[in-house]
Image 1 (tube, rainbow, N blue to C red):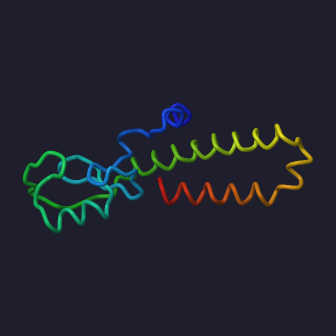
Image 2: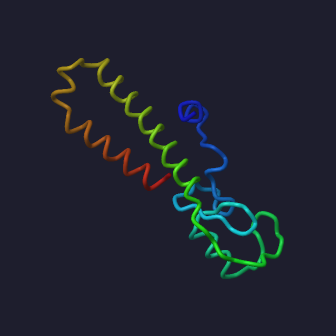
Image 3: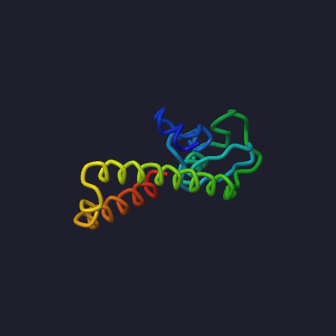
Length: 123
């Protein structure tokens, strides 16, 4: 669950590219059965004919979009966004009640936009 992972400061291991060790945006699957961030595996394949994970020679170097993983990553980060948004609302609400919200609606919209942008950039 998103809130459990956030409490530990980590996301599901399967969301990370084995090459870059970063959370994937555009996961693709290779003939070795592993998923990679598209740009990293394409760069790898320009210089190698082996699997970055197993080291085995690849008979095919075609990559295919991993839609299921991409959707899981997007859904997960939407949950993360929701948890953070609730925490921000509660924190602001505790300090000033509904009057505070009325005067800081632009701030809340900016925070929402920044968090949404961050999700798209860092998912």
